[in-house]
Length: 424
Image (cartoon, rainbow, N blue to C red; front, top):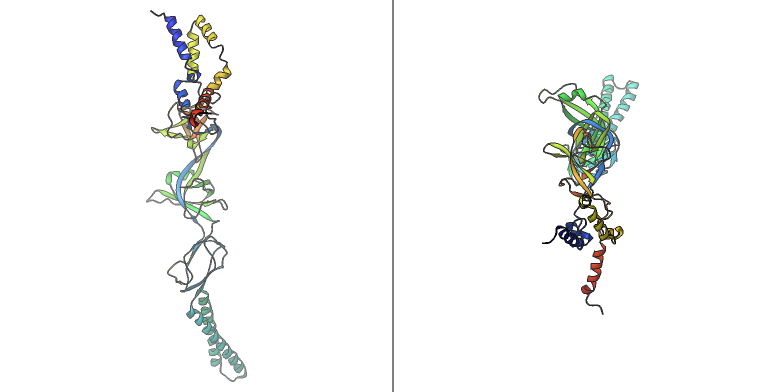
């Protein structure tokens, strides 16, 4: 019967004959020999840092302008000329389009002729009256006729001016609803002009939030469907009454001029009103927080020591002194540099993730306050954590790829002649 020590020696020599590419695990070596597949999950991570987080009231609303005008023709006419287009900046009184209306033009010309006639009759009556040639009644009638003609002319002139569409405010042309050659009338809008420097949002907040609201509070705005479109604002007005039907109060928020970015009137935005702030606290990016079974968690990235190496160290400690000396002599001719060349993972950080249960404090649009669960400097996954599992191997952008082993290179070189045919 084979002795126990002899059986152990044969088992060990058989394992050594397999090559050092299995030192980090047969599965890993086979994966690399099969084509160096990198099974690690690519993630992005950020550090836990000390910072500040705001407590905010969050609601939604639509952007609008304090100054906005829909321009409609006061008299109908055919559009003969359009002088501005959508997006053009204009000033108050600037002509936007010219309409053609022959009846208004003829009425103005006729009123001008009638005014000239009434003026001549009045001048003649004034001269005759001074000479006593006509009575006071005739003179007054001539004077009244002149004033009536002047009033008619002013009215006709203003009516003729209706054929010119002008802007009542400074702003930007938001909409042009007319085309050259079509009939424009007061029944439809021709232009819309908006002052983009006077944007606002009107929201309705619950009555319980009144205690946290004051005029002048800082507000942050972000597009509901585009978080990169942002702007700042302040609480401009708070309604003095509460709507008894809804239990809400109307709050008007003014957008800071010049900071609207890509936000536009009519856009649906997320409104965050800051009511308190914690400073000098541990914070993580808000996108690092995930929810599992109703509780907040995060994936912490750590570096793991190779399990096979740990196992080898434990086994070495359990072996007796004679066997230890034998193994040392057996591997004496294998220097460490040669072993590293055979290991495709040499020098590459081995990262894994672990799930951490969090206790959170304040949470704002960008960061979350961590009261327990993490320490400053910990790495947490911010992108790519949706399908992770505990102990999953991950890599960060910039981590190197596994290298080809010396044995792999030799195999490829020996196989190359047969691929291209027999060498002559």
